[in-house]
Image (cartoon, rainbow, N blue to C red; front, side, top):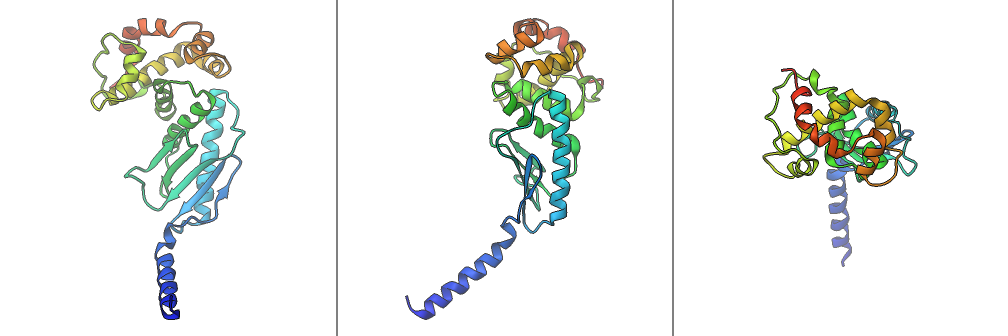
Length: 235
């Protein structure tokens, strides 16, 4: 390659790097349990503020579920100048990762997405209804405090059918609602003590549930009509 072509190539690469520079990550801000990565020239002070918010929510959730912090690595938080995928915040439980944009400032939603990660790491066998139900509970509280409309009864309820609804376009929204209803019932009737025990028991999720709550999942299924009639929005 001639010297002239090499010069053109160097100039091209330099211009390309300059144009893409906003996409590159700044030096991460590290807290006790999080690594905050900024993309797009985000100020360090804003990353530190997000780090403080994450630590605050994380501490609340650990205390609520009665579990210890992760011992392997930090939870990564990627902060962008604009929402990614059209959403203000996205959590990936398996990857220990959260994507959000720098204007995000909603503690309740942060509790919601961090709940996925806390439960996934402390109780990987937990079904989706358990994770999603508690995520909604930690964001909004007891479903009976909500002011939206109630849903239609869930005929022939079973946890297997509930899990299946999460994978259907029509029934997915209802699945979140019914999961929230069941979790509200569990918290009202059995409280945090039983919840905390489930993370310390052995066996499958159904085994852990039975040991912690003193009832089987089948018993909860048989009370489904009562639960959905009494644990619903007050709208």
